[in-house]
Structures are given as structure tokens and as C-alpha cells.
Length: 109
Image 1 (cartoon, rainbow, N blue to C red):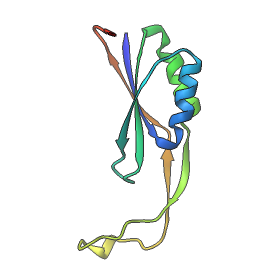
Image 2: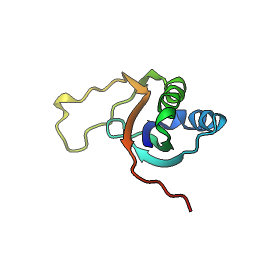
Image 3: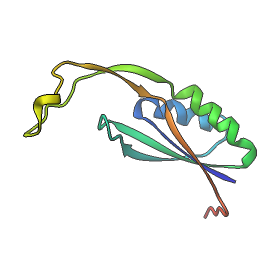
Image 4: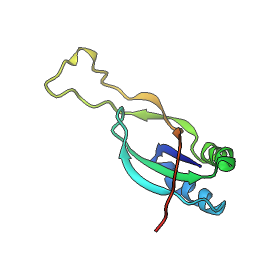
């Protein structure tokens, strides 16, 4: 058995959740925050049998695509303004960061 932990952008959360439920996979959703853009993320915890790992990874990949987005930089308050860029910057957002962990035992009460 495996535990798949997938950190995705909030915008992809509902689509992924519906796709997982549509394929009879259960998941626990946790709110999380990204470090670079301070944007909202959702972390999915999905317990699956070893044989289902590739199917779940495929569902995640289909529903959490990376995309380009213009982001207005945050002004440095009291910090070093030498590296501050005063105009929007295009960055890649979305996609998924996935961790696959072995599970020795799983209980559901």
C-alpha cells in the first residue's frame, strides 16, 4: 500500500477531487500555502493499493497542468530594494508536486 501526497494549486483542487471520486479513489484534502508566491495550495493525501499508483498519478497529471501567470511582485518593506522588480513577472504556476510513501498499515474507523 502507498500514500500519495500531492501538493497542487487551489485552482485545480475541485477538478482533481471530482476526477478522483469519479474513479472511486478517496482522498483527504488539506489547505496549505506555497512558499514562493504565498498562494493557496491544497495537499491531497490518497491511500491506494500498489497496483493503483499509476492510475492515480495519471489522474493527477491530467487535472493539474502547469501554466504561465503574470504575478505582481511584493514591495520589499524595509528590506533591500536593489533586487526589487517594479513590474509584473511571468512565472510558471500549477502542476503538482507528488510524494509516494510506503504504508505499513492502514486503519479506517
